[in-house]
Image (cartoon, rainbow, N blue to C red; front, side):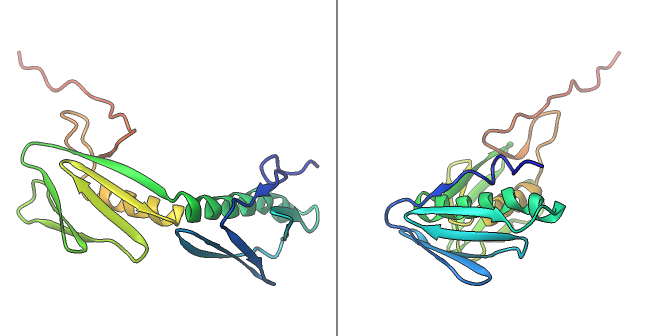
Length: 179
């Protein structure tokens, strides 16, 4: 059996970032913040000379499947504490509005009431006209928040009204045609 193609790539530690590997955790500290991730028991993580390597402990299916996952998670942590992650959402629709009210994102989405969304700790939300930007250092959290905001009013296929990702294309349908 071969090693994971992603898992066997070494991870270079960027300057200004410190990594500490304990018995069951890996902690990454960088200019934007600090993240920790538990290490699955099936893999070993070593850090030396500015390079992190992830190796499976044996040839079991579990170890092989978690090899690439662990490397990707650690790499995402490194990117997070240096560059950070962000997702952009666009709001389309007549009468739809978004603006920040303190920590809350207030949206008028065609319902009879305004929709309030409070960002969890560690995630920042900013608005610019009809665009919402979700940013933070934890990739999973940023994606989750963006998905939750999008779920409040998914884009519909006829006029494209709703909240969509900036890079998402909405498949448009032709409406009914009368006789």
